[in-house]
Amino acid sequence: MTGAGRSVRSKLMLVVLATTIAALVVAAIALVVYETRTYERSTAAGLMSQAEILGRASAAALVFDDPVAARENLALLQVQPQIRAAAIYTPAGRLFASYGSTDVFGPGFAPQPQADGYAIEGREIVVFRRIVQDQELLGTVYLRAVYGLDVRLRDYLGILGVVLIASLAFALLLSAGLQRAITRPILAVTEVARQVIERRDFSLRVEKTTHDEIGVLVDAFNAMLAEVGRRADALEASNATLSRESAERREAEEALRIADRRKDEFLAMLAHELRNPLAPLSNALEILKRVGSPAPVAQQARDMMNRQLRQMVRLVDDLLDVSRITTGKLTIKPKRCELTDVVRSAVDTAKPRIEARQHTLTVTLPDAPVHVDADPTRLSQVFSNLLNNAANYTEPGGLIALRATADDDCVTVSIKDNGIGIAPEMLGPVFQMFAQADESLERVHGGLGVGLTLARHVVELHRGTIEARSDGIGRGSEFIVRLPRARGERQSDASGSDTSPQPTALG
Image (cartoon, rainbow, N blue to C red; front, side, top):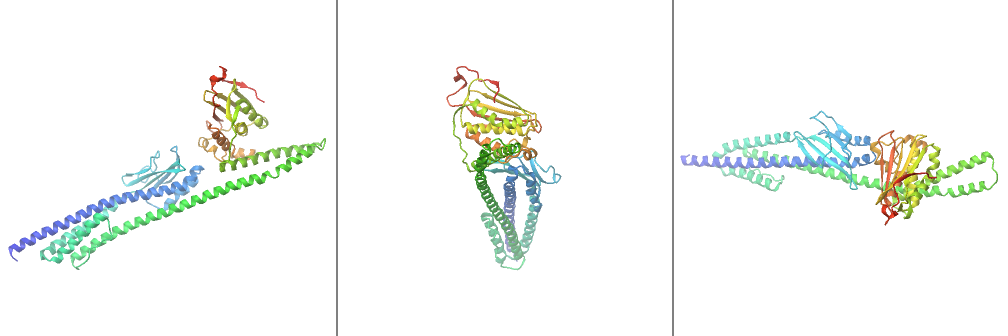
């Protein structure tokens, strides 16, 4: 070999080495950056999907205040050891249910839920996902999982380092031969690396033309691409699985909606079926009244039948109201009526129950007439339901106060007692269908638990609001109904008459 030839080989060696190093470094950087972003996005997407599934599965538990069911849903995460901790929060930020240890990498649960999204905290990733159903916020799902990017990058960098070292060694050995067969595979590797970076197509492979060190380099590069492709396929399969599970969840929710509709249809049918025997029973009672002077036993029997008849009528009316509420057929017939007349009717309806429980009832009404545009029968039913609830959930000998006030725009009616009270977490759910404030009293006094639900719907049909207040268990409760005053009537319209509340005796 001449000196000129050696100079060319040296230059070619430098070119080959520079090209190989540049291609591999660029490919390595691109793969690392891509893998970093892909791993972050795929991990976050997987956790967000998992949180979405947990949220949908736990929506019913939040609605019905069932933390046990929520914890059972969270317990399913034990098959995913990378998830260290999970929790479900209420809309108020209270921890509703939790899963996992709190001493893995520090505190296991966030003190307060945050907006939807994720955050990487060292070797962990934290995900928050709100639970929304029918545009109503039910709560927030929180997940804390291991973020193993460092391990993943260490493996990739090890592979890339081995490939880079091997490439340099092969280039040093083979570039001296100045053979075209040596440069061709290297150029092929460089070209494939460029296409992978541009197209993100990991199915590309370098064609193997030799079985020497360059061939080993080609095999290593193809193996690396195959591994990256398999991992990408695995992520796509995981996403497909999550999509399928989401579809199954939607089908389950549809089945639940169908079951709920069938329940409503059953209640409506039951109400009409129970109504049929009431007319013959009422006729029989009327016949008994016309027989003449009855014996004491017969009189007691008639009294019992009358009581049972009234109870059956009340239960059937409740069932009919349930069907009207659930089917959206509950209507009102508003007309201008005087508030005192409506309250008087409600007090007369509830008085037997109040007297039977030996309660003291005080009624405070505005001194001047106050009118509302309302259905007097339905509005009286609202107030009598609230008075009956106060009587039922107050120990015998209690105090019940009905107070009505009026300002320029609205009428406010408050019914307050010193009974068993309402737990803070029940102040909202107490208006839901079939909700009970106290199970033991409910078993004693009966009822379907629809009185407050009916009251809320009737008040809303009157463009008003109803609110429950209580300082806690054993500290009494208060229900406040606000209704708009009759159109064209304001406090000043009463010719200067006083609408301030004054104690009034009704009945």
